[in-house]
Length: 356
Image 1 (cartoon, rainbow, N blue to C red):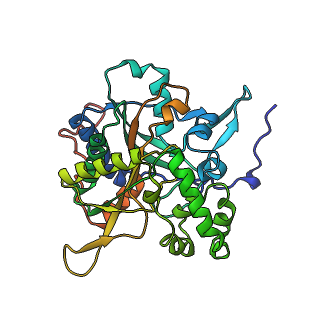
Image 2: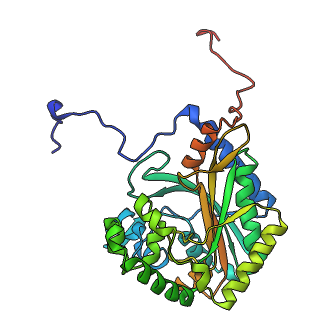
Image 3: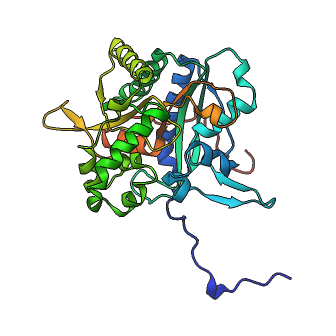
């Protein structure tokens, strides 16, 4: 028999920390971005895919990386009633790659070009533009390792923001392959070992597991140390160096401005070769003068040529890009970018009385 609730113990139920209500007055920004995503997808022949919000935890352990902050600290994971470990998706690429394998898309004409948009979940420290439920859109290309594909995706990413009127900077690097990173990690370890006392506590714990994580730390002291750290580009094999040079040649040919950031590594283990991020710019001085912001990237991506094989599929080259929607809306408002209001109804019907 159910007990009646004790009125004295009642409390106002409030929004969970790290969550956000999208109110009616903000829906026009969401609709604007979603429409632009669909327009870009149509222009470049991407097809929509909607993987589930819930996946096996092992999918993200294998793809994102066991030692990453996402897997170690940020995933919403639990056992379902069958005893299986499942997780709310913390990012989009792993689920899309699983679907590519599971539905035999390798047998379709390549490349297969897919896009998605929806909610993701990370138990992260809430701050402006960063929530525990957040929305992303992403574009993924499977089955083509030509450098021109890298350049085209960077062009799509850069122009997505620039066409909205947002001043942005494209940062580019190559993280090479496993052998390149083994050599690079040793060089990083040698560099950081004698500077360990200057690192934050998280980086002190990471230094032996994966020293590349130190380059992605947001702590100001760690960022200062990273500026003089060895560069990954000096440890690229001939194969990866040649591919990256061709990528940059194609980016130059498309006349997309970029900055070579030799310490850009991204935070997920599945990346190989080309990586890139799109950063907002802030006004400096007079009208139209901008410089790169020190806040956080609007979006980013890169190659993950080994991910499909890691998840049990056939070796398949692939590259992707994703962007956070909440962060983008903040930038649109900050730069006072005008967004069309939602259309009003052409006809409004009102009942005037019982006889109407």
